[in-house]
Image 1 (cartoon, rainbow, N blue to C red):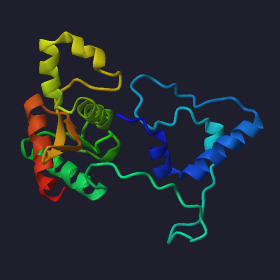
Image 2 (image 1 turned 60 degrees about the horizontal axis):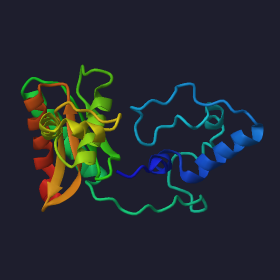
Image 3 (image 1 turned 135 degrees about the horizontal axis):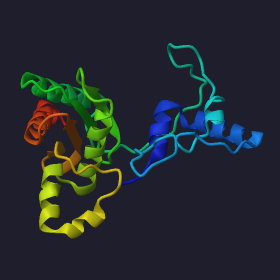
Image 4 (image 1 turned 90 degrees about the vertical axis):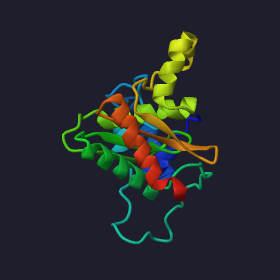
Length: 213
């Protein structure tokens, strides 16, 4: 799985603004970093390496409304296989509703084929870290191109597979690959219910959008 931290940075701040902020920090000569230390569980694109002093200097840009034509354009990234944001949101909502019908309140995450988050939802009363757990499951699915439950079974048969599991992956059940016509398009994962319930809800989320992928 490719590591493309600037993809998330571009989506939030814009590459031009981001580099400008880091440059300002370097000119000031303040070496301090974000006070939250990175961890092996950090998600792709986390901002741990951007000093908070630099974050404070990021330009706010124009008021809300139509984008001025003279603003710097963000770099165009190559398209990645996966559901659009709209379809990912539909899948997440369908999975959320599927579990709710059975009495479970869960969190849901949907990613593209490289593990970048496309949509995430949290049901009422879910654990604060539920979204992150679902996201870690999608990273597992993307890394192994199989469900998290299938991966567990594979590890039971061949413990050496554990050597391929990265620290930011979760081995809990509930993550499924999004596949159409034999092509891997992304992952969806739920968290907060029983193993088989989570898989059922994730499958319902895929079924909601698969014909339009």
